Length: 345
Image (cartoon, rainbow, N blue to C red; front, top):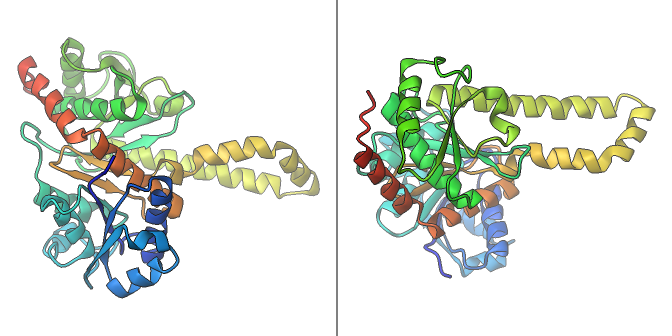
């Protein structure tokens, strides 16, 4: 099956061109139908392509000199959307020259440029940033919003639930994903008025492709007990950073423990299969690729510190969303909200 090509912001991320091209090449070795529009410094891109000869025939280079800085204000970056590698990658999706865009650059700038170029889908108030997180169960969990919207009302949360369920159906294969709202407790009377209103509306829904199961607390996100966790962007970003920090803490603690003495080093050799499994689950590169859901086009945010394997995973996320037509899936499900009469009050 042929796919629309994927626009890669080759200048984004901590490692820059080399890692972005290496990641795209790795993705293409896994799936030889992938084709790319590589946006950025043409000279540096060509140099990186020399070590990946299989990429040349599958790639076109769009040269530009301007790059969005990692600490640049989104409002300032937005004024240069027509000249930066990030902005041109997103604009390629708008013009139909690419099916999706992938960038490891400034998250706020990428969201601002994507919203301006692609616009929010009809019937949707706000897009949301969603990502897959590992769990102890058989499924990864979709979590949204992770920082695109600091404050959300009940209608926003209901729409996020619909979008998250559509995404989860693609990645888990479940016809009715298990959806929960993030809260400070599982009792019905817990949480803000907006969270409680969203709870009531989702519980009353009988035509949405999901099983709404109420609330979940932050310490249950990675247990595998649900498929979608819904929250406002402020809470979601804090929860995500706490999970990432805990993973790094465990990894560093194990490293210190296993190198503290000769006996510990011997113990590490004995337990190495278990520690390698743990390392795999805690490695963020294995779950790299956050998605801006709710736009008229596919945009995937790779972590800035992602290695080539992480970039390849982000590219594969973009391809999978194109294959499964995530935009139309969300549009169809949003139509069911309108028939339910939700107003967010």
